[in-house]
Length: 382
Image 1 (cartoon, rainbow, N blue to C red):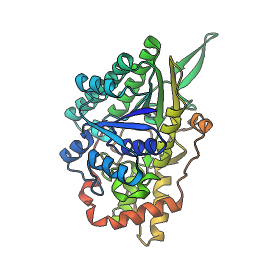
Image 2 (image 1 turned 180 degrees about the vertical axis):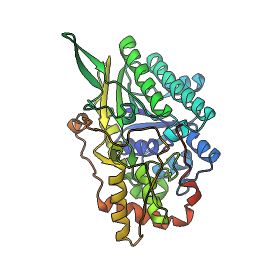
Image 3 (image 1 turned 60 degrees about the vertical axis):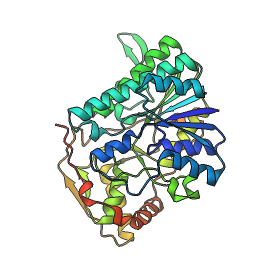
Image 4 (image 1 turned 30 degrees about the horizontal axis):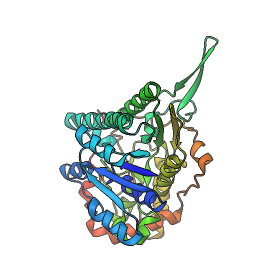
């Protein structure tokens, strides 16, 4: 299949491109280096240097024999998008091309406006490009479990059967996002659902939990192929932040009581979920939704696991509860259903002590690169 990965420079976009390429697909990536620019502007560093996309693609070809075509440009610009889709005519489009961080979206008006304009405009351009240039292409959109919030009932897989006054109907599961970033993801889902109904598009929307990890099967060939790894509060995911904090002797920053529970997954499982979705496409006129995670943990659970693993390496890990800067329920019911991807063949990689130890041992090698003052920025929701 010809697969176009949008946001192909990102933490998940680049590993997905390599994984799809290694699986025998013809892959192209597009990016405008937005994440790199925002990290520079907010003065937060990656754990290690990451080559640009052209260098990455050349390195990947040298070690694997597989080619990934690179296209640098802004997906907010219709002329770039139209030219890209006409040139590639993809069978599948994997859409990661969004401002990816809830804390960034809550920084200030400028960050909020950028998040709104970028995320919604890019999604709209993708929809219009598919309709005009490759109407049978399958859009695989990376959504987020954060769209659902923490309702006091089970979270079904995207849809909810409702009985009201003796009648029944199937609706998109109600969303109640906890940040502006997550709100744009809800808007994405609504846009896609509208155009699926209107134009018969085929779409898979992956409600993904927070991802952790550094290594994939493809990065074993050369460490220079590793994805971005943020450890700051703005762009770093919680478990990635915790393992870095453990290594440098920074107390693990647990927000509030630490009872917030979410569904998590290893980066290797993200790649397999995307590949399984691409290789088993939705039908024309279908918005298929999968809840993409493998295990649920509270923040306290994660902190304890990191402390136990870190203490095996004699890191003397401390945990500190800090005032919660977010507006969220800290004690709540949480039972999301997640069978769709398992039914397609997902074989999960669970969060084990060995996984944590492998991450920590690698981070120890990068310890001199870590800037402690970038870890905790105290970005407040209100």
